[in-house]
Image (cartoon, rainbow, N blue to C red; front, side, top):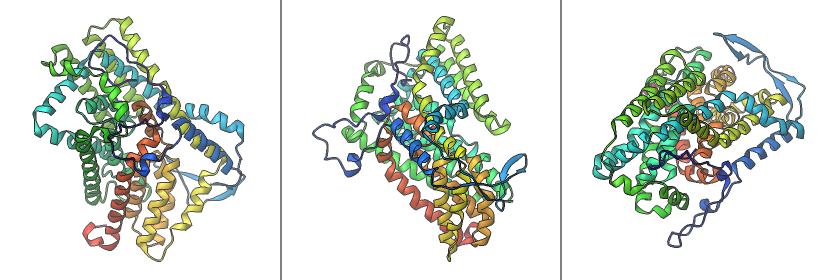
Length: 503
C-alpha cells in the first residue's frame, strides 16, 4: 500500500511490489561524496535472504541433536522445567519441509497477517477521504513556520511510540503508522528512513527497555519469582536513556538530510515518491475541512480505544483488527462514501499488502522449521552452560548475548520469557547475578529486532515502506552499535554499584 498522496482522493492506492524490497540501491548523483564501505555492502532480496535462512536451518537440523524440556503450568501458562531437559530424536528437515515451511508459517502467523491486511484496507479507506493528506499539509506548514515545531516533532513522536512499547507492549500496532509517517517525512524534506524509524524503531526501543510492559517484564518477573514490575526505577532510567539516544540519532540524520538530501541512501527513490506529493497544493493549503476533522477525530478515537483496550482489557491482535475495521466503516459513513466505493478502496488496500503478508509468513516459517526438527530446546540447553564465568558482570554480558541470539529465532516477548526465564533465573543464582539483572539482559536482547530478517514485524515494515533490507541494516548499524554499548553500561551498573539501583 502506498503512503497517502496529497491529491486525487478518488484514486485507489497504487500497488507496491514486494520485490521492490530487494531492488539494488540506485546510483547517487555525481556530486555526492564517494560511497563508504557500508554503502557498498549489499545483502540479497528480502525473500531470497529469508528463504536462504530456511535452507540453512534445514541443513542444521541434520547435525544439531534433538532435545526437549518438559513443560509445567504456571499461572495458566505452559513454561519449561529447567531440570527436565532430555535428548530426543531429532527430525531432520528435507527439501519438502523447506517448501512447506512458508505455508505453515502463513497458518501460524495468520493473526498478524490478517491484521496487516485488515489494517491495510482500513487505511486505504481513510486515505481516500484525504483527511490524512490534510493533516500532513497542516503539520508541514507548521513545520516550515515554527522552529519549535521543527525541534519537537521527532522527539515528541518518537517519545510517544517508545512510551507505547514501554507500557502496553506496542509492537505490531506500529505497522500501520508507517503509512502516515513516510509521506509526512518526505513532505518535511526528510527521507523514508525517518518516516519508518519514528514509529517502528521508537516502539521497538520502548518494548526492549520497557518498565511497565506486562508482555515481557511482567511475564519474566512472574516466572522469576519477583514482584510484578519491581525494579521499575532503574528500568525507567534505561528507557529514558535508550529513547534519548534514538531521538538524538534521528534528529542528527534528519538535519543532515535537510542540508544534503543526496546523502540519503533512499534519495532517488524518495525523489520519485515526492513527485507524487502535490507540494503546490500544500503551499496553497488553507485548512482542514470539517468532514476531514470528523474523520481525524474518528481515527484519533480509534488509537485511544486501542491503547485503553490493550492496557486495561488485555486486547490483542483480534480486538485491535476489529477496532480498525470499525474505524473504516465509521470513516466511510462520515465521508459519505458509497458502499461500492468503500469496498473498492478496502480491497485495494488489502491487495497492496499481499507481498508484506508473504514476507511475514516466510519469516515465521523459519521458527516452524526449527520447532518441527525439535532443535529449539537443544539450542537453548547448549547455550546455557556458556553463561558461567569467574566474573558476575561477564556472566551477565553472556546472558545478554544469548538472549540476543534467541531473539533471532523467537520474537515474542512473552514466548521468550516463557522459554528462557525458567532456565536463566535459577542460572543467575548460580553465577551471582541478580534475577532483576537477568531480566534486564533478557529485555535488552530484543534491541536487535529492528535488524533481524526473521522478524515478521521488521520485514513487514520494510516491505511496506519499500526499503531493501540490506539498505536498512546499513543505515541502522551506527544506532545498533550505540544500543549495544549503552546496554553493556546499563547492565554493568547494577553489578558494580547495586546500592545505586536498589536491586
